[in-house]
Image (cartoon, rainbow, N blue to C red; front, side, top):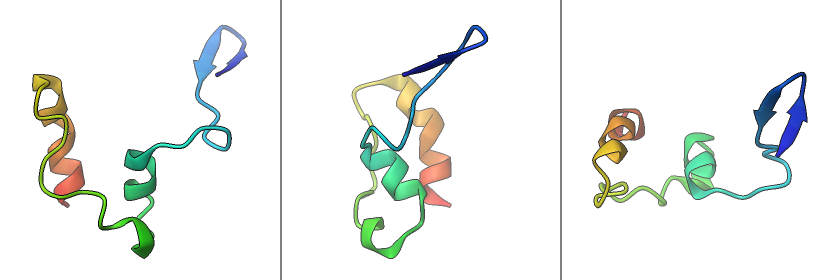
Length: 53
């Protein structure tokens, strides 16, 4: 985490995330989404549209 002027953000250069990799649209990561995303959590549905388009 980085903290500056009362704000917080994730330093993506120091953390790995398969969602960030997939959203980069790089060909080597496009296999990561297989049609489901956080199926056990209702709030996961909010991201599905972005993953499918």
